[in-house]
Length: 291
Image (cartoon, rainbow, N blue to C red):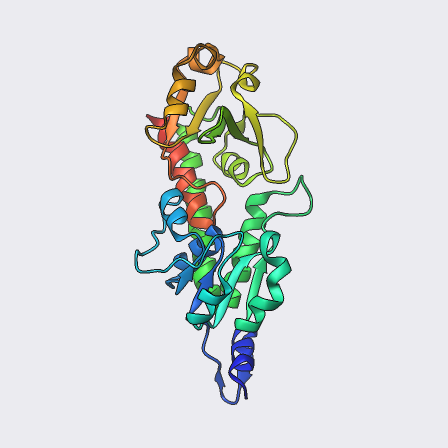
């Protein structure tokens, strides 16, 4: 039986004789959510696309410094991946579908859809379904279910805590885009919107749902927010553009800002991740409201 076929049978969980083929151990990840998922499931990738970017944007789980970078998420280095002799490759269909056959020639490959086809579907629920696929492919379904259960219980506990403290109001989560005057403001269908709802809060941003789960706007678009809405901002620490926007007259004139309802979230609160990122976001939002 060829080495490649053994890998494929491993991915599919096929039994050979009395024993199951060992689950993948040498995994290359080609997107942040894939890197996070593999780490959360108890494996360390043998290579990761944009490893430095992951370490800059995603706080938990941490990617060890020893994991090599295999190129960008848009154009990973197939040559570098080949030298790592992976037994599984995990990445995004959105970017890598054109090279799927070349990746599969190196190792069994699972490309994740990333976003549901229905713009009104919950991206939080969709992410959990994708995470289950990853757990199954890696032979770690039990670990995946444990992480999902932990997230569900944690969000429910924080919801009860916020309700007991009388904090179950409206929030808006906005991410400043470095080097621009624009922000991503997260819509109700997005993963952030799902976490907001799971916490028993209402999303103060009522723009139409977006395929990626956010609207890209300038600060002027926030002028219609109620003064009762809490605005939570994810922005790089010390970013000159953000500091200029934040201290300027337009930002300061926004009703929630005038009412003292601005909160800062950790700059490395990742909004497009798996269960660990969703739980971190839920804790960040809850802690900000309870201060």
